[in-house]
Image 1: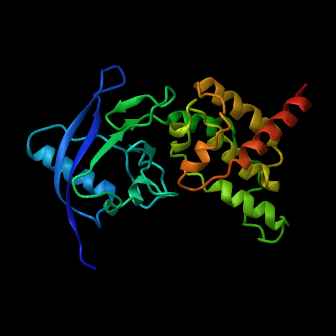
Image 2 (image 1 turned 45 degrees about the horizontal axis):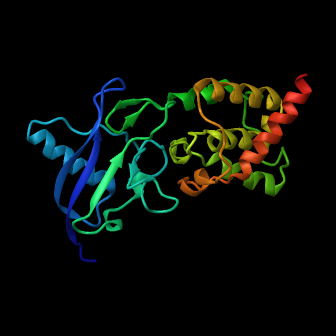
Image 3 (image 1 turned 90 degrees about the vertical axis):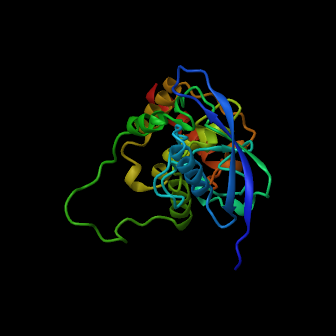
Length: 253
């Protein structure tokens, strides 16, 4: 397959740290192959900036395989860019046209303070997970895979919820910067399985309390989180979270 090249303008948010005032800076990026990934295009821009003695654009990345959730960028007004069910690292330049201007921003949420440029601090998610604690399991040799019978629907739903990679796109898409989709996925995948039963009630209470402590907003019920999630986590998990939280709250009284 022949490759096409394009010349682009990238309008990138530059900000030295959380306390500094940021601004958009426009760069010309020439000779970009439409088969490149979006992050490869950013690499080329940074190589040029370094060669010219400038400061490269800071952005998060790790696996570049759509697994780690690090590549958090707001591209042309949408988290992770224009493709559905896609992370930034999986986005390819064929999604854009020659001569196009691409606007790149960091996640905009008070709970995700900017570290530098496009990099934000998402450790609030880590603290929410830590608040959930551990599950009680017997140590030793691995048990037989069929020793704990689980209904197929529950197993499927738990697996789907566990696909959340914690990228924060749901927070970035929500006008209230809510973390409900993320939290509901983390609560659901254990609440649906017998391994998560012993700490089921304390887990949801502690995780919701930590989410509120981190300053995330309330759910808007508009579904923007589900629409932009790269792993297509269902908002049905939010309904399950609310049910789990209500049940745990009532039994705690």
